[in-house]
Image (tube, rainbow over all chains, first blue to last red; front, top):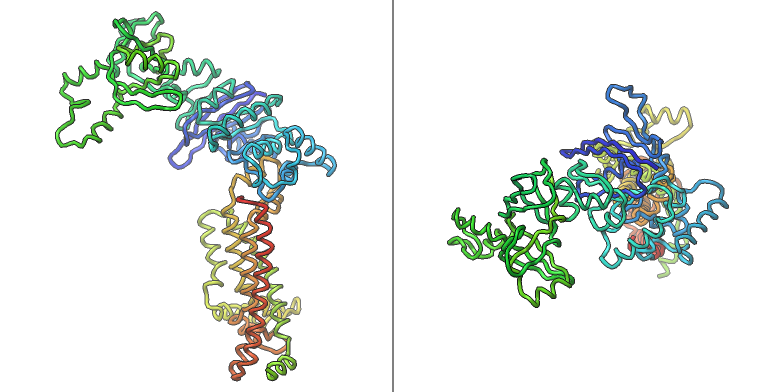
Amino acid sequence: MAVSADICKELDSFRLDIHFRSSARRIGILGASGCGKSMTLKSIAGIVTPDEGHIEIGGRVLFDTGKPGKKAAKRVNLKPRMRNVGYLFQNYALFPTMTVEQNIAAGLKGSRREKEKRVRQMVEKFRLEGLEKRLPGRLSGGQQQRVALARIMAYEPEVILLDEPFSALDMFLKDQLQRELMEMLEDYRGTVIMVSHNRDEIYRFSEEVIVIDSGKIVAAGPTEELFKNPVSREAARLTGCKNFSRIVRVDAHTVQASDWGVTLELDREVPEDASWIGYRAHDFIPVWGEREKNMIPFDLADSAALPFERNYYIRPESARDDAIRTGVPRGDAIPAGAPRGDAVRANGLRSDVICWFVQREELQVLEERGMPDYLAFDEDAVLFLQ
Amino acid sequence: MDEIMQIIEELDWSPLFISLKTGVVATVISFFLGIFAARKVVKASPGKKAVIDGILTLPMVLPPTVAGFFLLLLFSRRRPLGEFLFDEFGFKVVQTWLGCVIAATVIAFPLMYRNARAAMEQIDENLVYAGRTLGMSDMAIFWKVVVPTAGPGIASGTILTFARALGEYGATSMLAGNIPGKTGTISQKIAMVIQDGDYLTAGIWVAVVMVIAFVVIFLMNLISGKKMKNVGRW
């Protein structure tokens, strides 16, 4: 079921301007809160009306304002209930005064017997036996999700829209419900579009990803490819990249990462339009001993211990040399009169701080050998960004 | 004691029935009108909302005698509307039981409307959107989802409306007057016997009113309490 959407909407000072088409069965929309991803979904469902645009699912036009200059009579704006689109709300939006059965039957048409039969099928399929007469307030989170999905599936929508389905859940429940949801959607033949600010959810779920930043699409493409090569800085940041530096392209295989004070010599060719590089915090390789190419010496600025990994915040040594040269006080050299906390905090937020995240297995090595002398860049992991 | 028994035996019970009848009818009318108005106002644009809300709430804020004054102006048979109602339908409002009902409805209506509105505004709008995407008509969403979900607020609005309608005095006395056996409500009866210095009879009526009020509130709490227990935190 091909989905095509062109949506323009102005809201206060925010402007949503989204254009995409995709024939993937599982589409993920990734973006920070307030970037317009939910509004995109609501526009498709017909809950929000765009100022201008064209929305089409499998060749069926749901919304169309036509080209500028076209007659107003040509406008199409199907009511939500005519769109045949299922919408899973973040809080599931189950009707609190209706039982599970009544919730599932809420939107069904047809005779009483047909409805009952359909409800029974759904109850069975979504493993809700024994809960038919319960009210939603008496269900667990997982059961609520199943009821909400059963209610949507009951009328066989062509497209299912998932609006941040897991963001209000704790970690344990989240993982469980993600697995459940994917299992339940497995044999669903229509298109599913999921919106989330969580890159893990999106990566796990979607075949194709659309990355939105302040109302615009900054990247789109097959999931794995996009995570490997996000192309734009915003997309890289949203897919979880922590470290960025401006670059000066020296030649086809050499770039100077000016924010980190390191020159990288690569076998890969540096794209000519790249103006930034990104490097994921997990991809640094610790090196003990001699300095070779593509390595940086560093000072530890701060660290944070997490259950399964440790986050180090480091500062490249060359940056310190620069600072000494330019006379900017850094590190322990606290300007006279400044309280210490402020100085540390200010340093911690400086863009020359690099995040290096070390996972458990690697951490053991670190504990045995001490802090490495250098961090090496893995050439394949360097992201060239516009 | 004997004196009280004697008074009770000889008591004319008509004010009780007039008040109850008025209260019930006014509450039923306010119930539907209030919910209807709340639905309209919730959906209206902010500017319209402020104006309509102001007008609908006015009877609650104004002294009942002022409301009674306006009602008298409106329904007097020497005025266009009153004349029209009498000529076309034979409706007499002033000095009739119909007047009692209209006065009580106008005064008590804002309580119903405001409670219903507050309850509806608190409903998660996603419920309405969910209904729409599920293919429910707006009417079905309203009566099957919005009203039941707003149930507790609507129930408390109904209690307050009934209580207010039952005790209405100011506007009723102006529009309907105090005709024994016809428009003489309990409130008016109490005021009247007090003027005669008959504190004992007044006291009996006061006791009657208190019993009714308590029973109504008790019943309503029972009903809404039972419902809420099943709904849980929703």
